[in-house]
Length: 270
Image (tube, rainbow, N blue to C red):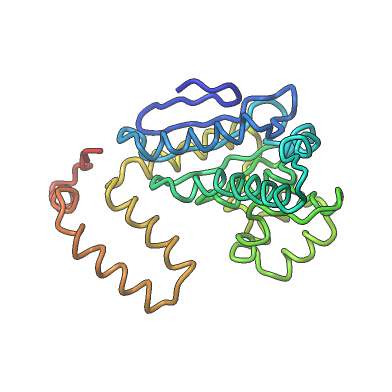
């Protein structure tokens, strides 16, 4: 896949999506927003891609939304009617939200590998990933408050489930920067690696482990976890019963059982 603002590779069932505007600290311009959605649609639709890694090129993961894009919004939504102008702005925000939700809609797990700065819209982005890992030099900031706006594309809705409401409120109200150690302590990231190279190696090893599992079961597990987050326990139990009634008796189950007896790793189809 060729994109203006991303580089995308696929190797041994692992798709690697790299934010690729290093000269702009990977600031998320309009083209990048569109590319991110297209890239994760591609991952979802490509059977050979079983898991995805999201990372950044250059010194930082991302500086967040491109301020030039923000400054150009006025011309984009211009209308003589105030109501219609506000309606257009709402549509823009909803479209940006949809871009990031493409990571959740992607049936394959998404692992975010973060180094350097992850600011503003970058927090919205990684909050949509299945898991987050970072290098020791990583820093994080919900920066929107410092430019006089409310974070509006997912941070305030997703982070309470990751770091707790109290910590989210502190970070959202103050905009203060946290380092890798604190990000690990509050549960924003699963693990901290000493260097960027170690981060990339470690996250790829985790991705490879996932890619070796039953693709059907991995996709089902993501579906169930996402569903359980937004529903009651009873709803989740009912859904997984229905899911397994449909999906359990698969070739993957038979291969996994046979592999357990033969002590040989199973080979799954995509």
